[in-house]
Amino acid sequence: MARNVVISGGGTGIGLATARLFAADGDQVLLLGRRAEVLEEAGVPGALTLAADLSRPRGARAVERFVAAEFGTVDVLIHSAGGSGGLEPRVESDEPLDVVLHDWTLNFGLNTLTAALLTEALKDRLADPGGRVLFLSSIAAFRGSGSGAYAASKAALHPYAHDLARQLGPRGITVNVVAPGYVEDTGFFGDAMSEERRTRLIAETSDGRAGTPGDVAATLHFLASHAAGHITSQIIQVNGGAERGH
Image (cartoon, rainbow, N blue to C red; front, side):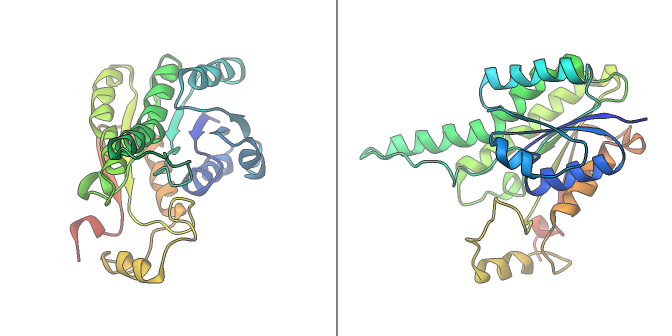
């Protein structure tokens, strides 16, 4: 039976690869993101798209209204939206704490609030039993990233997922987190990746290769399946062993 699948950040990278897997199953997919043109160009067969700023309550409520009209219920909710804020305007200030405030507020908005607001807006529409909620974290949540704000904003998803799993478990809904490492062909790492850094990140893995959007998408796809019905409140790392070191 076809399922209703909502994917934030569904127009690029991991979100897009995930959307294609579910669409190939015949599921009805809704792609969310801030840039309408990116969603439209994604080219996922049969997918619906909606542009919304999920870091704001009105954006999450817009999605809720759209879902109510088009789907009714949500079988799978995947949070792939996020980033480090590298594409956002920088703050101009002589006060260093203004920069700190900007960076932390920005990262928590992009990575934590987008997930929390959308989840809370759609929580009552999750299919029960059988609903799935999946968050995208990062290897940075375990070992830092050089940017305290980004790592902390991803790590914040972990206890939220644990609390949600306890809250939604009685309804037969599972909640899990997938934490990727270095993934090539994504906007997060982009063209700015130096060959030296790429070589270092790959050397940290046990399998000697970079991750792909498909690696993460396949993990999300499994966790959303019936076979994963007894897996909940887990943080699944997809990083080739890099978090453990090599």
